[in-house]
Amino acid sequence: MTADDLLLLAQALRARAPALPAAAGIDVVAHSGSTNSDLLEWRDGQPRALFALEQTAGRGRRGREWAARPGDSLTFSLSWRFALRADRLSGLSLAVGVALAEALSRLGVGGLALKWPNDLMRDAGHGAGKLGGVLIELSSSAAHTDAVIGVGLNLAPPPAGRYTHVPVALFDTTPPREDWLRVAATLLDALATALTRFETQGFAAFADRWNALNLHAGLPVEVQGDLHTLSGTCLGVDHDGALRLDCGDRIERVLAGDVSLRAVQAS
Image (tube, rainbow, N blue to C red):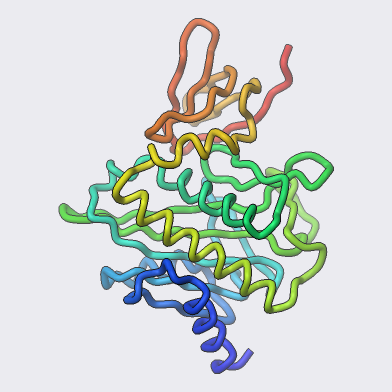
């Protein structure tokens, strides 16, 4: 793609994402190691979206890689400044997941669910697989917090490999550019709307919507951390984004961090 082609894509995204503030920047690049890393270096206080048609060194939670072949994935990051301390942003990644899932539903995508805390799942008829994920990186000062919100979404099936979750995709093959644009603009617009609401209302405005999409609602699960493992029935999330587990004799709350959740077979 030429520089003019990339500029036209950025302009089309702007036209189709009216919720994005007028001062926000939008860039589309042919290649990026990591859109999150690129935006972490750009801190002028204004929102900025960066889309990469190919990403070679993307990051997921717990150090996992997320690489994208040209056209097969939608990979982008959005920087956003909150007039809040970082400790007031509890549940942000879950709110982002809600915004993405609901936006895709409006595009006619079925079988969507959310896996706490950062995974977008889809049941394409063979059991739920991972459609996408969210990685948020924060930088705080006394007056505000800068968030870089990275989104990776499988548009076409990724190459064979070893995956923590079986991957699924929106399309059977690499989609045409118009479909890339339609999905990208819809998600960007939904994300801008959600972040504006999150800043004033917090995760409480999203909790019930997240619970309605909870992949493991009422199921036995394990939450594994570096120091211990909790087992119980998944009750969903509180208004601060904490996962609630019915452990039989008590209700445990787990805050998102360096932990992973998986379903277990009921005994």
